[in-house]
Amino acid sequence: MKDRFLEAGIIVNTHGIAGEVKIMPWADEPEFLLDFDTLYIDGQPVTLRSARVHKNCVLAKLHGIDSINDAMKLRNKVVHIDREDVTLEEGAFFLADLMGLDVIDADTGETLGKIADILTPPASNVYVVKGGAREHMIPAVEEFIVETNVDAGYLKVRLIEGM
Image (cartoon, rainbow, N blue to C red; front, side):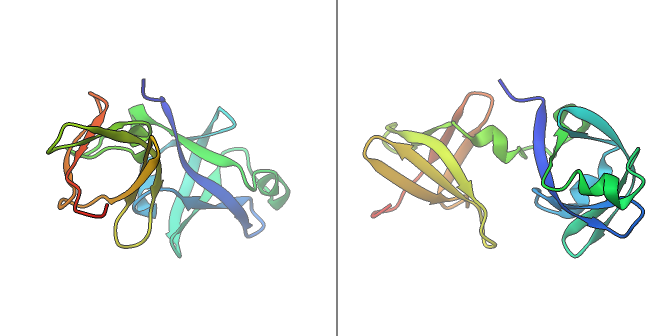
């Protein structure tokens, strides 16, 4: 079952003296967080009064956070979003939904393991697949990914020799 609330970033610092916070987003683009009216911190909804992108982070003014002292209490808190507030493009998915998917070799039908981690270097994501005695690191590019079916719980891949 998919989690309703998804981690979307972390509050890394304060900004100014009026209670703004600096959020390091965990999304493809920081602008993603600008589309939300409500964020969730410690399971509680917090209204987003204003937000803007600044140097790959989001500077946000949250309802009820009106001073630097209030903002400092939020440092290192994880910010969540409600998945019901998001409309993804067709074929898009959250990385969190890939965790634990079975990874199947498209040519042999063999189950290679499960996605245990996702690395996010600049070029492309890399799925870390663990199963049995082997670990595979599979770049998330069309040359290797044959099919992603989050609802059915699997990812089909085509490996090359040595993977």
